[in-house]
Image (cartoon, rainbow, N blue to C red; front, side, top):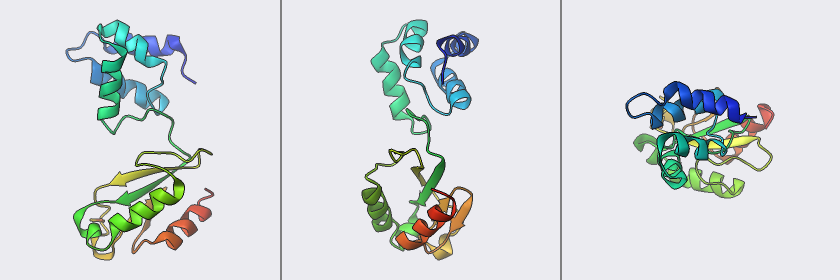
Amino acid sequence: TAEPGEIRAIIEAERHREGPLLPILHALQSRFGHIPEAALPLIADALRLTKAEVHGVVSFYHDFREAPAGRLTLKLCRAEACQATGANALAASVLDRFGLDWHGTTPDGAVTVEPVYCLGLCACGPAAMVGERLIGRADAARIDAALAEAGA
Ligand code: FES
């Protein structure tokens, strides 16, 4: 868990840069894997911003997570070649089944679903990735099998 003292030290290390907000957020994310809620008021204080302004930046950049990621990441390709082979419908059905939006994590903390823009499997889309494992011609059954195998 994120200790306020540690959060403060990270903010302190970056705050004197020009344009310190993004470096602070990157440093927090790389330390904690997400931007801890407790960091928002501390950053706001340090940079003389409102908490809403800090939150706005965190939610604008999808690189920043507002909650810890799941144990496994399921990436679904959304780039053009995969779209032509039904990636949108696959993504819609996967997200719907998990009850998630992009970047969301299942309530048990098992799986986070992320969009990705080309996995190099364009010739056999739709492409997906479960953990480190690539899946071509992905469909719900193959994704489920890979998740089960990975222990999700
Ligand atoms: Fe999906 Fe390249 S477009 S893998």
